Image (cartoon, rainbow, N blue to C red; front, side, top):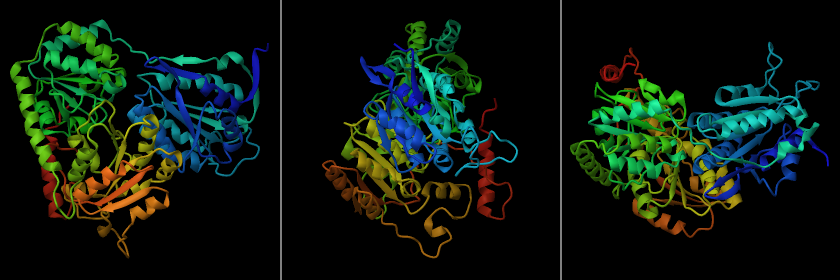
Length: 615
């Protein structure tokens, strides 16, 4: 029996991917849920033929846009709490570069994504080939070098045997809780077709278990001492708490020790909205309940969060001069931010081990009472913002209220950019962990529909609701057709405010004139009246436009019996946003301008800068 098997490099990639497994709740599953592929001359002959040979073990899904398919792969991984993932293969040149934005999404959000773009000819004989980028001073450069800044691991495969160490390294990165992020392997198109005698052992089945690194005992002890000294502690829960499966541990910790929980965009749903110690969103898009506590907190226990500017109010949210941070995170880079006491380890085990040293310590009763009182006040404000009205142009919040009332907290809501993430962060009442799926690390317009498709593939038996503005819809909508093709039903709520309403409000808030954001304020011969329903129907979806909140609720209820993706369009007011809650965000205002509005905005900006902490 031979110890080797002769395969092309592409065949080796495909076979290797089929042998990578994981175990979830006692069930052994392929770690790759499939491969997204748009074929071109850089991958159709090599990877295309190889994927065809393993199509029964490793499904290949055809998309309509390379960025869209990579977004779907990212969403699939996020919905699986990083325990399963997908790969994406493209041709060279524009096909590959279309995935750069998605690689940025995965990189910022610490999500696993395997990118397999075709690359130039390693032998260079036919250079320059179609779609090849030529560097006048560096013969080794290809378009795929653009992936380097947004990849956790990058490699270019110029010999068939190089794929062995590259794939092993790729899997280590994709499954590591600290290093996790996108991996890019540029596959030279001639090498994809070259054969090599690979060791049979390279294709042995491998089961990847997701480790829980335990923190150093001294770090655990120091963290416990800091918490014991606090009178006004809060927990800020990020996405790492969800990926660790720490929801129950977090709830137990908060209840035993009397510590209110504030949620980031990535961490929202780690506790159900109904939990009495869940104060909801924190920071720029935070609830009044969370932000009032954060302002006074003397200890911030940051669990699985990278503490980005929306979470910290551009580092101006925390007003207590004595405030200290304990950072529990698998990644040292995140754990030590803002002079935090780092606890480098898994969220679930870290909570348990710190909690064990706290014994029966609890925060003062008055602190918990204050938190619960603040939550009650916030709930009144939220109910008022989301209540149904007969307004000709409802607010985003009123649309959110209608969706919440008709779907309840059981559906998974998907969104990404514009004004909706801020409103959803404040107002959506999440139920189960992972039922709130927002891409707000990169705030990537166009993620929404493709991301919804990825979530639906990960959760085929659950309702998936995509909320998207007209601006994001226009940027990337092609995977709506893919959802119809795959029978992956989505309910898409499309809010049409006729432009980039969120940035228009930001422009106004910084003193700028209404310019180039709403369609009516942009250079144009005719203000377009876009019929989104006809567009969605042309891609195979069911679509309807409604004229009121009442009609919206009726349409959503009716859509539940539809057999395929359904788009419901409603016109909304571009200027209304929820005034309750929120916090200042650092957006630099010009020092010099002839406009009085800008001058006044600059004065307010300079006053707010004084609240930013240094160090």
